[in-house]
Image (cartoon, rainbow, N blue to C red; front, side, top):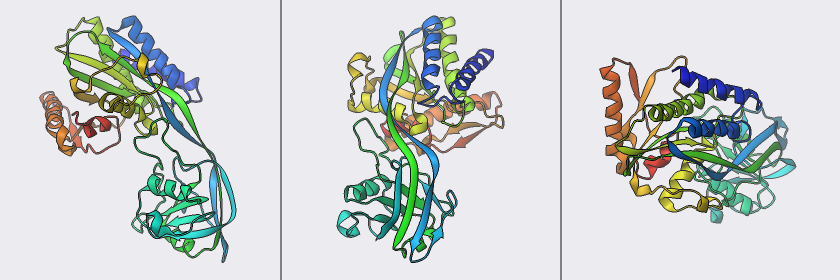
Length: 373
């Protein structure tokens, strides 16, 4: 525990030196340097960076939305409307003409060229917004259904984005149902946004064990990055420090595992699990980029299971074990067996725990979606 706290203090120092953050564009790189230095000095593995590109979306000022005709209504950001994440670059639309889309396909939305398109149908976000941009729309506003009282901050981006895939250029907003009712009867609106999307190079760190059966490889992973607006000591310095100390302890005790262990520190988790997605699709679907030729390959068929550690140090904690029943069918039985191992351990030591769903939110997701429990 003392060693884990030491790693956490180092990560906190790094965050303080990088605008109180360890995100992809702030302290993540220095965090990676620290982890690699520990592995090279005290670890027992072949450690390397797996490089990839991540889109980083930044908002510099709050957006504005105003109906201009047939009457003026100024709306409140975060209450009435929201600029959706990855919703385009900065724009200043004055008295933009409004078009209403009550369907999701190009043959049914009509002429949207040069217009602000208010979408009232329940559509796929990125696919619909990008289609409308390609059709010449100036901005897109998705209207939420009446059951939601707040606008959405969902990502408007391909879930499994990789370098070369498109990103939105025009603004994409979300509006509450009541605001949407007004927008559908508006003829002209003002929209101003201040945002940018940059594609930046980042990395995972992989520490490939030198012993153990490679045909039954176990991935032990945690994301190393933080959100932009905080140091990420719980989320997820706690998980990444714990994984680091597990590897160093095994090396110090000269533990000889039955199966090969691969320790992983994922990048860009806070930007949509992009680091773990890159690893999974590189191994499972032969994704490549300009760095792939220089990186050691782990055979996807050799990976037996993935253990993911996220947010282990909440001050008001409860131990949570993922419900393996939620995993896709091709990863369900293995996930259930892993669940029982943790439950039996907690029960044996009389630790309180709860079972939580396994539907999303962390880096286990790309694995179970591709058949690895």
